[in-house]
Amino acid sequence: MQRPIHIAVVAALAGCSIDPIDLTMKDCPCIGTDTCVLDSKRCVAITSAPTASVGCVIYTDGQLYCSNTAPSVMYDSPNQPRTMINTLRSLYSWFICWGPGEPYTLPDSTQSTTWYFTIGDDPNGHQRGWLPGAVVAAPMQFHVDPSAFGFRACP
Image (cartoon, rainbow, N blue to C red):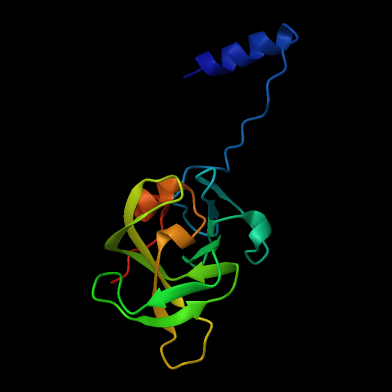
């Protein structure tokens, strides 16, 4: 176990520069008060509320915050038959959970079946609904398995 320490000491004596190791960052899913930053799949401490400037994150409240295409149609189900029930009009939104549904094509031309559940912006009585992942600007690998990043599946 001491070998890495010896290498660091030898490198330091030889005049080499070694960047300090950050032991606070780890891979997602995060535990406690850390936020999962999806682009790097790393846990970090973010003390402010999520904003578009931090990118797509799974915040300490367990919800996904991410940029999205707007306006986007929301549906009553991620599967056919489905009905449009609301519209998401914000450009940076929060999502409650995810679930499998009808296949769709992502911007990189791959197929996905991950749909996201959230609250719409139109006060029409059907506030909650589903959006295909193609409108959520998360990294492509996130759409494959959001649970691997610590984002919960819908019950």
